[in-house]
Image (cartoon, rainbow, N blue to C red; front, side):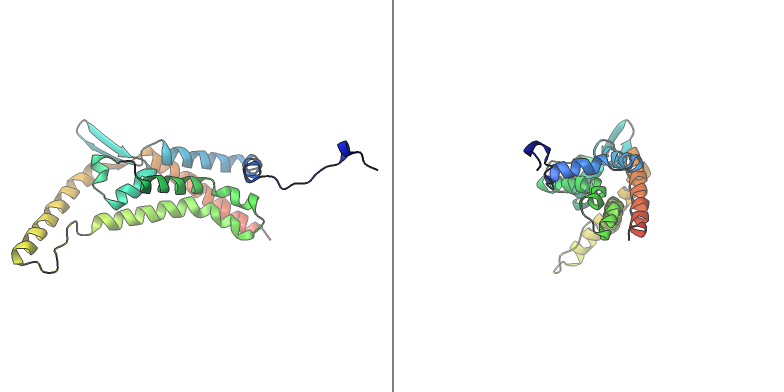
Length: 195
């Protein structure tokens, strides 16, 4: 008969404990890719506008505010609930590679693609938002109002061309892209390898 001290109790553990052991069991390349994402999205600039000696940049987790109002790229970002929610989404994507170690589903490997998909969706959405008309004429607008709206859009487009010459992609974008591509390829290879 076993004594109470020699009995092992097999408990599944709490989610934080399981996540910590899953993080410890990740390969070094996955951990480095996650660190690249973390620094690229939260601590370094993704887009930088420089006009003379003035330089303003935004980090990736600010991208939801820039997508909602592209002029925020030039005037700064306020802390809003939308920005906080997008930051949480970014954190979930950074830790998405833990999914295959927390569940035995084969499809969990596809979570490795989450950071790349988020970058792609944000890039396409920002491009779409900034390529359209900045101002729209109301449905009952007369010819004078329509002409003013057309003039304002033309002026904004010309100003946008000047800004585009001074807009650069920051180091955070490159760092995050490298990390997300590493995770994407690891996830796809894990999905193919997993029976």
